[in-house]
Length: 163
Image (cartoon, rainbow, N blue to C red; front, side, top):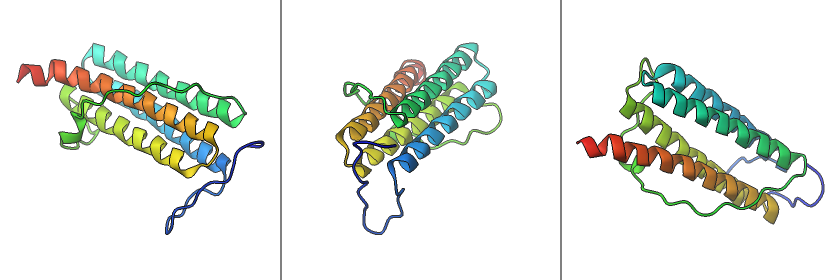
């Protein structure tokens, strides 16, 4: 990426990307992985409504990928508002995406994944000095927080409310 992007801050002892392009390529790769993850979950769940939800999330992750590709090409993102965190996913045991997933385990997996994506973008924002790129990563972090919130609300309404 050229023009206006400052150097990347390096943290002591960590091997980190050397250029903004490497950071953006890394984030673009993570969005493709997220798409593939949700697409795969959609094929594993039995509930039609949950299948549709995961397919929708797969499409949203491709949207994030396109935004990052746009940023790499020089476009800007507008900042997102801070999203509430119910922290439900923070207190649940990790599950593995194996075999047919029941509704509860699929939601747990999705919450954990979105929390990790939020941390990724927050960490990437801390790596860059350019304010526009920092804002881009913080905006994407808030989009991932919105995803996590949607899964937490779903979990609260359909799992916790039944227990």
